[in-house]
Length: 403
Image (cartoon, rainbow, N blue to C red):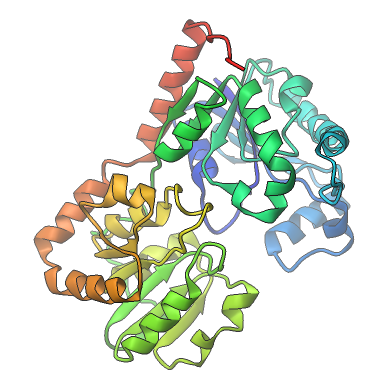
């Protein structure tokens, strides 16, 4: 089978996502996959950002490098060359939806030659949360099936909320199916499309293997004593900055080690003044297991809001796969999926208590139980479930939508 992914996520970054991991796994299962990296907008073309991946894409456009590159057997990436314009400043959603068709047309015109080059006569289009740039691609590209991948609640962010509250349900309705990585997302999607399926999440079991002998990284080795760690973007839309600050102040003997890029609020926060808080910067996925191996407890101190309440945090699987005790905010997914194998908390006092419990109760047996539980989640299983739902859809007619 041939698959074309359009996504908010680029496939050549230092952290994987549901869409990039699913695309790679489908290719490993010998399906042909074209992953379309996010197009460049006019502003980034004129003033390239600090992000080296985006800067490399801009350079490729300027030097007229080949847009299609093979990353692995059965897996190709497309770097679109046409520049897109920003229309999100338009207050009217009907006018906005008319204007974004211009961007959709430009993206489609980049994808069509790639389809021809790869001999994708028939293909399945998978739209990973690209609500605006991918809204009309089903009509423009005429895929055999068009699927929407719902793996994050982007409408919780102001940029997406303005027009996304109307356009995302419309995109779900006209898709042939919606695939979700959390149970809450599945229930929401079923309001708009009866062909909405839960496929869960996975992790790279070969990479996050507790049995591998990974030496402690130098910057972590410099931090002696108890290490309480977090890996991921440090952004206040998702993480409770005040909670982290209070935890560090309440337990000065604990070292809080944070890996990931920071938004402005984190970069200017009081955390940087505390002697037991260490910012080690962004790390490549391949380097993360070495850090996890030498953490004593792993955290996911999410702030509870519309963005985080229903999401499926991939990092929890990675933490557990390394056998680590995990203390996390009690979101819906954490309660429904992970409650038997993690310590859940809702405030500073509960976090302190649960971290102390996690440390006191950590045993080799619990380590193995966590590893075994995480082993139930793999991209191989997610991809096979995805394919099985596709096969159901091609054999059974879609019921009419109720309006």
